[in-house]
Image (cartoon, rainbow, N blue to C red; front, side, top):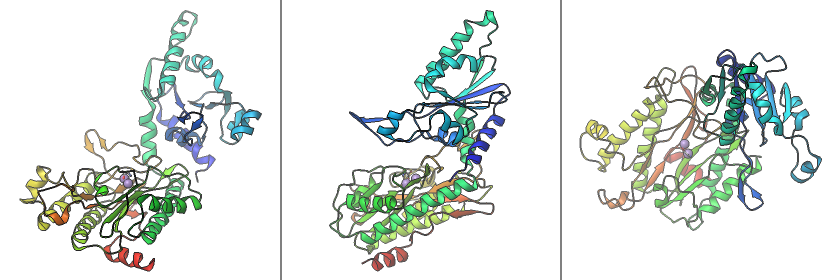
Length: 438
Ligand code: GLY
Ligand code: MN
Ligand code: MN
């Protein structure tokens, strides 16, 4: 887990990256109502958590480099006995200082009236412009208050900078403690996928498999998924964001599962595609092995110095060659790649950054060029093939097959490490593992 010291270091690093005479503001995520009197489980905004570790709503963090009374001010809810009885613990002002290292803690009700004083004389305000309407409004109101007082010496800020860019660049590089946290999210998710492989039988419903996976995660204390699980039997796998998970699993079909748990606010994101009855049919195996070849080739391109796009380009090359060989595409490989003729079967990118958000933050391009991979970055590698059930351009035997294989990969000094490597992946491994569970 992340220590108080690391949260502090992050705040220091942020302040170092800010311009001189600047201040930064960040609001917590609001609690979200699901329906009358019922809220969704609370999840803190990832940037807010990254800089504070403070997981309560109704809070604003202020970072003011060089401020004498303290550089980290946390506006939050005061401790309230009644609230503690109804909804449980909250830090209160004392807790904000003691447990979260705030130099100063003030009641959230006082934020709007304190803001002009905080901004007075600052040249630059860093905040997530246009993200939180209430914060936008409060910042503008504070600036206008200062403008109205310039004759008495007030100095409103002149420059507004998007805070997200600075924080997101920091978040892209994972520290050893972040990597440890991600390992745990991945490890438990691997257990959940293994359990799915071993309990799966024809006739079960997709939600029953989902339930087994949730059970496995929850019994390890990971109560939340990083995103809604995709448990897609047969041609449901061709719907990329299928989350109904309601169909019955048929003998002879494949089952695609894309699921990952969240641990300490970090995500795992793993996909496997295996046969409902434990044995791949010949067409399923041929397509599966092609996707696997593409995935391994993409992973082999992950090392410092290579660009972000190289694994994707490699995956596309392998897939197109294979699709031609199997007869799903006709023509010259380079032309099919140039014309994106593979897109009806492979319509998404081969991966994304992974971290506190499943589609994590961080630029993919710098100055319009694909950025280079560097140690500490974590990304997914997830090529797939999806043959639409009604695709009349291909032989009937391929139709309705949807396959994706997704692993979570850490860029290391020398190359990379597949964090989810413990999960069976080859045809032989999966068939043997499923057999062992029967
Ligand atoms: N689970 C979402 C994704 O793979 O990107
Ligand atoms: Mn996924
Ligand atoms: Mn993914």
